[in-house]
Length: 145
Image 1: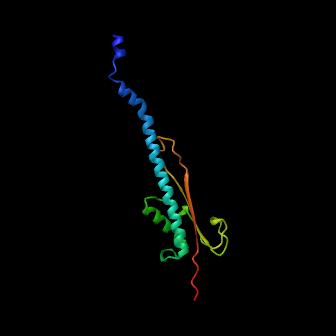
Image 2: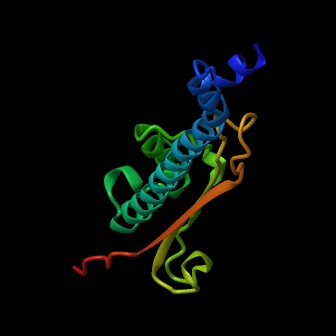
Image 3: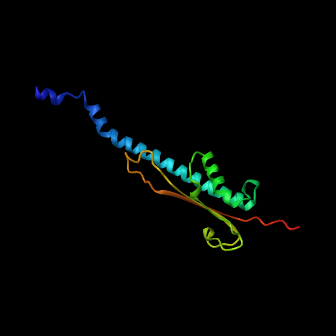
């Protein structure tokens, strides 16, 4: 009877799948979370650039510097990423050296720092760190009369 048991191969595929499935699923979940993290980083970078450009060009939506964090939050939310207004740092003093823009005068700078919360953080050890994005844009010269 024991020889017959060792020759029986009917459950081999199920056992092999049970051994390989956890590693395969972990890899798939890590790839999905990595892609979501890269996508979130890209949205933050685009939002920072758009905010700096909007301030520099003095668009009608971006004339008030104190309203720019809310503008950036709305822009990021339109792309599916939620950030807090406190995560947006604006440097718009174009006359002096701007620390966000490597002390270059005549630049508007925007920096966004936002935590990245993994949806599978308790299952897999995915990085739970913050994402940062920054952008600078030169201030458009004012037209002379």
